[in-house]
Length: 182
Image (cartoon, rainbow, N blue to C red; front, side):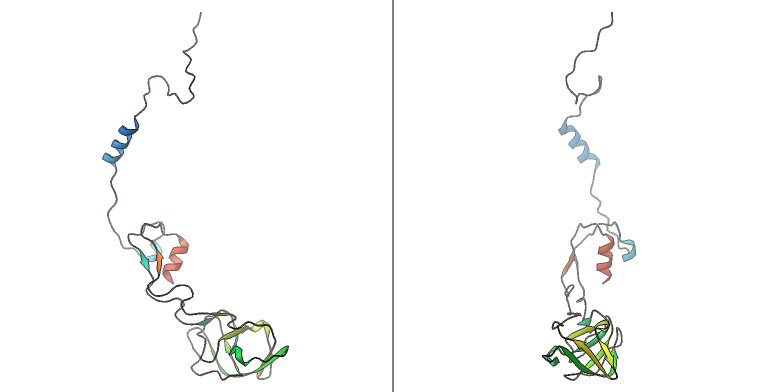
């Protein structure tokens, strides 16, 4: 007659003939066999994905470096708006574009054409979306309700010169590469 195996009553028991490695022994083996990676390598930003930073990374410049327009539209001084429901501002000659700043001063009570990313010219603190205006001959017409400073980004809004961007030991991800490129 067959005899059943000895009852173990332990779902964590190893098969017969296999022994546990004591924790202290396992840790000692790890300490013997593992060593820190100490090599430092400089790579192009596009090759940095998945790498571990050897040092903290701080900003070398302010971003954005100057106040700029977040939209295509028209820039003016908010203080030049009236109290009525409709505003009319004459458009001055010229425009502000990314890489092509408007070099004059926008007089109070006037507007200038401004494109996304363009430096906000002197005399401008607010930008209205081009979709929110009607261009009527040489002036823009729009409804009231715009907030002061609308559609503008301040210099250093993202980060300032010397700000900590990434910490030592961080694994570089795609958004980090975009941040570092900025």
